[in-house]
Length: 501
Image (tube, rainbow, N blue to C red; front, top):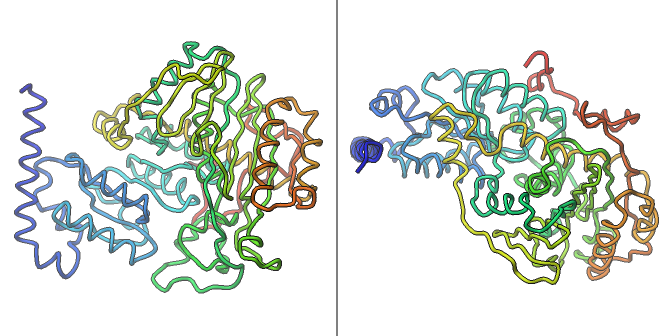
């Protein structure tokens, strides 16, 4: 056993011994409530100097954060923060059962940011909180792990990058594939010419999304601090029946499917194609369709207002990324429904859990397997205070999220430009990437018809191509589009100006 193994073994034994004593001495407290933070600081943790963690956002993904931090001997969860008190208490109890004492439950993360024993803040909240959570934590000297998308607007991405640079703390985004061996090896294979010259990536998110319920007026759950939940977004009446998760499909607080899973697959496209910038042009078309058919009611109005059929094309000179989102029933594309397909002159690569390279005849050339632990990589970087160990830093996350925001902007700007779906195929013929999206258009048309959509009558929005100055990261001669790069702030939760980060 080498010196490091001996140290790790002693640390693990000491922690298990401490937890056992904690469970014996604190059983009554576990049964009736939660240990306050001061008791955590005097409970013997300093002997091993475990890094203190606050998990912000106690939903499904927040549970993954808590499990990762509890299971790593280097960290201890001190706080669980969520404006929904019931979710926070449930998650804290589960953490307590694993680590021997329950974290303190809070609704407002600012209550804990001055705790000197708090080293790390992880964020798995609603999208519109990611950037502000990161900035507040960085300003207080904490390391941060932010779920994708790292931002909910283009401007927020710039702000979190500026904050990470200014405060010099580790900042990682939760795009897990950057940490997985299969993807790392597959990217190297493609970059080394394994499938020839690569100029196209298709991001695929074919995930059935049923109606989120009828548009109406609904009560916010009593256990939720709605002002805190809204944070940077407008405090508007609730118009969806299910409070949690379905916010994704309302643009006032969500980014639609392209902003939900698009950051993963736009990131894959950028990674495989070697693109580290904004595109030259972007255009988008889509609609929210099929729910009147699903509900068998021609007058039904779904509470969502983001497209459930959405195609966005990003042009980077002679390279192209296409992001496709389909929320109705649909078959896979080249055996991919949740990943990306990378095209080269001598073959293609599929990424759907594992990565497989094919030649142009569809014969398997090479398979890539192997996982990785995104949280472990983050903690390694924090422990060593070495940002070079981070697989996906703030800038990486910000660019991949920005592509999705640009796609939404192109859609929203084009929303007044409605036409039957069949007419879109003709309208895009003059675009640079026409050969690419001809196939995408045909596939999408077949998908819609299979779901009972009349493509000759059903209206879709088509945005004309928007040009960008990729160095300045702004749209060229389109003020309306540039205004959508940032949302109006609420004073208490304003994203700071870049010169005041």
